[in-house]
Image 1 (tube, rainbow, N blue to C red):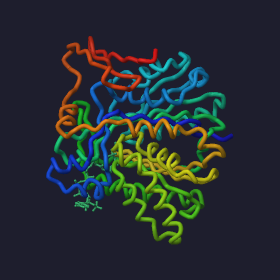
Image 2: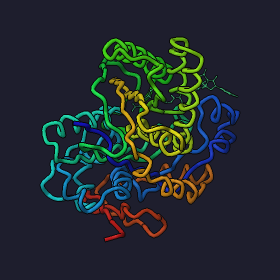
Image 3: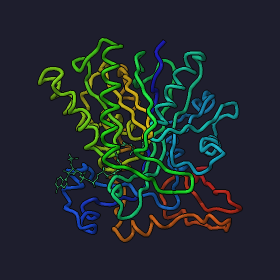
Image 4: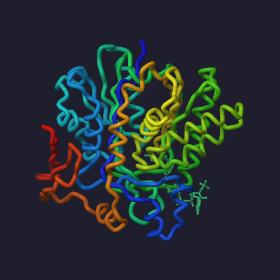
Length: 390
Ligand code: HMG
C-alpha cells in the first residue's frame, strides 16, 4: 500500500521585510544577506498571527468537509508553541471543525517536528488504511533584533494531509536518521528568542547530512543518479547548498547539474519567507513541485530534515501521476503577490509588539490582517482565536 502526501498547503503572514533594507540599517553589505545567506525577503508575523493561526490558515486551503470527517489524528510540529501543556493542534482542530473522534498532539524537536509527524502518520496509516492524518509544521523564528541570527528569521506554516493512495507523493520505505545531544541552537522555556551557536550549527547540519546520506546509500543501494532532486531543511537558502556541495563529486557532472538546478528552484519560496523552522523542508519541497512545471511523475525526491539539538533524517518520496492537479499554485502565487512590505522601523515595532504575560486582557484589531484565522486578543490568560469564515 502506498502512503504519503495527499495534499499540501502553505501560509505566511501578509507582511514582509526586504533584506536589502535590513542590511543597510544594520550596516552590512546587502550581498551578505542576499548572496552570502541567500535571503531576499523575510515574512513578518503581526501580533494577530501566531503558530496556531499560521497552521490553521495553511490547513484551511486544503481540507474538504470529507477530509475533516476522515481525519482521526492531528499532529502539530512546532518549536514556538504557545502553551507548555495544551497542544497547539487542539486549537486548530476546533478552528477548522475537524470531527471530534481524532487524536491530537503536539510534537517538538526543533525543525524536525513535522518530519516526526509524517513518520508517525505513516505508521498510523499502515495500521489504519482508511484514516487520514493532518500534519502541521508551524513556527515563528525569532532570534532578536540586531543579533547574528536576525537575517535568518521568518514565519509560516505548512499543512499536509497524509493518507493511503496519496495524490502528490508516495513515501518510500528507506529512511535513515540519527540523534546526538548537542547545543547548537536551543530555546529555554523562559525565553521567547532562540539561543544559537551559529557556526557550530552550520557544521552540525552538514555533518548530520553526511552521516544520514552515507547510511541511506548503504541501506537503499541508491545514489545521486537515482534522484531528480534533493530538498533540504532551509534555515537560509545557502545552508542546503553547503551540504549538497559535499557530495557533488560522487557521480557525473550531469547528476550534479540536475540536482543543483532543482535545488535552486526548491529555495525560491524559502528565499522570500525566511526560516519557518519545522515547515521549512516542506516549503522547499512545495517550491520545487509548484515552480518546476516539467518535473515528471515518477521522479524520486530526497528530503533532508534537520532539527537542532539535534535529530537528522534522510528519506524519499516518488511523485504521483497527476500530482500537479493537487497543488495550490495559483493560491500561493496570490499569497506572494499580495503581501505588503514593512519598513525596518515597522518590523522592529512589530517584533516588540507581544501579547501581555501578566494576565491582563488585550483586544486586537483583526480587520488589518487579511488572514481568515487570527488571534483577536487575550483574556484570562487565554488567547482568543477567530475564524472569520464562520
Ligand atoms: P554571520 O556571522 O552573520 O555570517 O552568521 P558569516 O560571516 O558567516 O557570513 C555568512 C556568509 O555570507 C558567508 O558565506 C560569507 O562569506 C558571506 P559562507 O562562507 O558561509 O559561504 N558574505 C558575503 N557574501 C557576498 N557578499 C558579501 C558577503 N559578506 C559575507 N558582501 C549565520 C551567519 C547563519 C551563522 C547566522 O545568521 C545564524 O546564527 N543564524 C541562525 C542559525 C542557523 O540558521 N543555523 C543553520 C544550521 S542549524 C539549523 O538549520 C536549525 C535551525 O533551523 C533551528 C532548528 O532546528 O529549530 C536553525
